[in-house]
Amino acid sequence: MTPIQEAFLDAYLATLDVAERAAIPQIVVEHFCDDEFNANECARLIDAGIKRASCSLKAGYEQENECLPKVGRVSLVLNWAQEPVCIIKLTDVSICPFHLVSPEFAESEREGDGSYGWWRQAHLDFFNRYAAGIGITFTEQSELVLERFEKVFPRDLSRQ
Image (tube, rainbow, N blue to C red; front, side, top):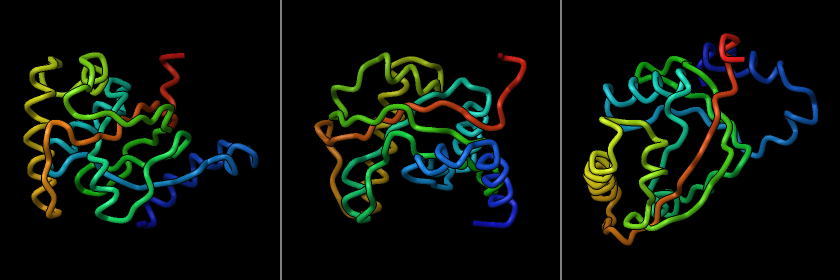
């Protein structure tokens, strides 16, 4: 973590009491997507409170020997330049095969033109590329980790 990232995270943690800090099961620092345009766009949408969900390939966690995300996890969202944009907290985590992801969940990701068709094609392309890069096969039956979240820092006081 860079000093700037650490200072941003510390500013958020300072708004919590001891019990709230102790209840955080995981803290991660990450950008979304695998290219500059989409990473910056996702960070912008999250910061604006528009994007409230994301998904990942469950097999990727297994392949990289990482723990699945847990409700309550705090993520410092970065842009492509690795600069802090905002902090989110997971409110729901579930597992679902790709082909059963609901249009409602896809809509909560709020990417592209907002249609289920756009979401489906963009995610097929992404997961096929990602799976090939880590040496596994992606199919429409592959399980996804569906995450719902809320932006918790900085708070937009104009929305209260």
